[in-house]
Length: 327
Image 1 (tube, rainbow, N blue to C red):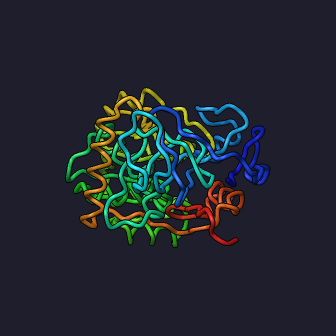
Image 2 (image 1 turned 90 degrees about the vertical axis):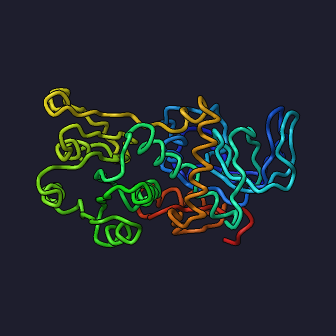
Image 3 (image 1 turned 60 degrees about the vertical axis):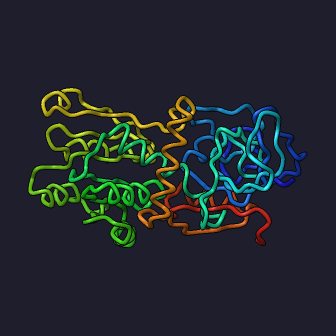
């Protein structure tokens, strides 16, 4: 099979397009013929050796996929031919991948398999952030940073479905318009110096009940100042590159919380709860309350260019890599 290989910590263009043996599923695993692999910002970190989980070298990157079960190991109930989507620790940027059966979910009826690859990570993260960690209630106000990215748009859509008033912040008028089209009540361009003051004014000076923050850096400091008394800063990631230092005195004086959101490890510790979470998200998809925006479908062979675009924030929504597609 064809697959991308990281032989040493590297940039996307330093990966190698390799011919590898077809993998064989072990106990509790299935082999998936990949229909699509979805890109995530963590892919850029993992191949550079800067993610919290560092696979043994060499490895094939990619953590999110969809496809058809091609072979099964012992102790697996999934049938050959079943359409699935889900997660791998790594290995999705290939024509075939071996996956623990517990990390896969039956693709919902009516969704094409390629689109199904865009569901698990972003909507799972959004649900975990808003429901389990943020404990948000209908009628509260949520500010989503980087709202035009994959996880940002998923959070905007899910927040609206949960009955929240969703405010969005994104870089540039085009991205703000995209967030508005996906359910944000108002969108703010954070390339404008006074964007935070605009958000505060939109809440009549009260502030927001929670901020979904996958960006970090100076944006986290601004977000903290935008929280209403009792608000929650949902710390999802650091796409800006800088890990913010959160002043404890501000948390104390305004009864605030800074809450870490890390969906992947939670999902592995709570398999049944994660399966129920995904079933709930699939129900919302069937009802039309959420719908992944796939902005690009590119051949698997174009992975380096696609990952570089994602890392430099030149993409919106989700980007999919399609094995077998023509370059």
